[in-house]
Length: 96
Image 1 (cartoon, rainbow, N blue to C red):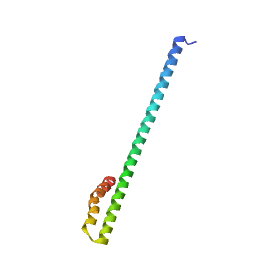
Image 2 (cartoon, rainbow, N blue to C red):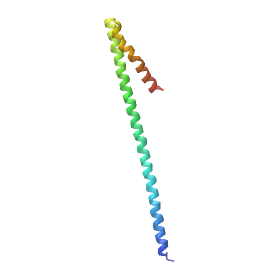
Image 3 (cartoon, rainbow, N blue to C red):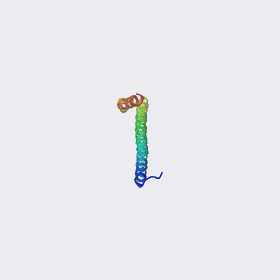
Image 4 (cartoon, helix red, strand yellow):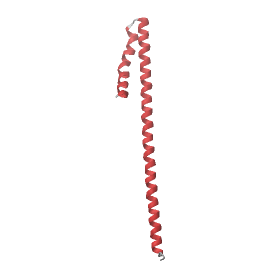
């Protein structure tokens, strides 16, 4: 039994449509994974920037308290006291 020309065209069209659907699904999957990876990288950069800020604030606090221990004057301690809330806020944000 031979297939007619019409049935061969329909079979080719259905095969092509199926290939397009599969390729579309694969492309969507790869794009979704790339989007998630980008979000993960952005979050990692945010965490690293926050940690760098915490490190700077902690260093400022340490230097101010060290200066206060050496000179025992109040103005040298004020900068460190001002940095305390910012550092503790960042720590709470990353810990929670």
